[in-house]
Image 1 (cartoon, one colour):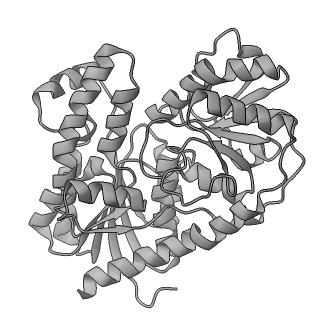
Image 2 (image 1 turned 120 degrees about the horizontal axis):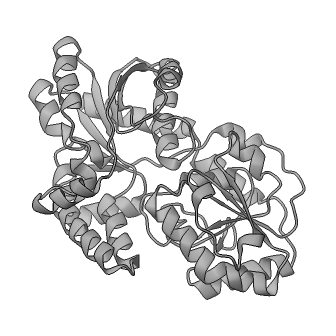
Length: 401
């Protein structure tokens, strides 16, 4: 338990329920485990179409929730209008009058010890917060957004998407480093992200706080797996996941089926049930979509594939799979920010040919047993208990400075 209780205002762009993607898990983990350390959290968030009653009930267990009826959906008119703005579209669509009004009212009646802002999307709030309080304000950078946009632009074949995303990247290149420098501390999720952002602006005050996993995953028993089973986990509403699965289906999976026609690929995650699957591979694909308990679903599946080509930060699903002792094949982008050793904690491949060959070799040489080294690696570095303790120490450092 913490030695003293802090009053924390946490500002989030999304309700962290259900816990079905890395963004929600990363936000919830921080809130939940700071609450376990006896800190009092006022949690303000965009509703964004979520179930209000469910979200309020769950958030009330770990915080005092303030769920604002705000969405931040993409729109073609909004994207076009943004061409005339210096602020990236993914940022401007989160700048909402209801949140500005809430913050003005909140600081009239409250004096938090720390303000914790989740994601660059809400980084604009720093200018407003500074008008009302001189308490430390931290920004949690779950990803370096400009790096995601840069990689997304480079991976596009559609000329219009390529040009638009390149223009958005240039906006991020100006906006993100400047905004980060306004905060008392930027909590980067990986050392790679920290070095990247400091190269752009050495005046940014940074610390590395990784994402975590629930310790209970380390205790889950392993069971015999379905032979020749692959699986992919991830919300396809997040562009890097959609790009990854599209690339895998088009350039990798057909070659695997040609050599090993008995292979089956299981798809999990929001949007996978509407993903267009080519006729040549559809008989080898089992679409599961969103499931209530992903860990129960995948316990008898063999090899996880993480074919990410774009993205930033770290993949929480990767350390969760490692905590379960599952075997994983990932690109270097997929395992970025996690100091896992290829060939020890997971398998690695980057080109389509390498990815295909690694999977064929994996099944032809026989599946590996439980990945005990990966479980030990996660236990030593990535539990939420360790993450929350580190975060608390950084808060106290800022307050005592």
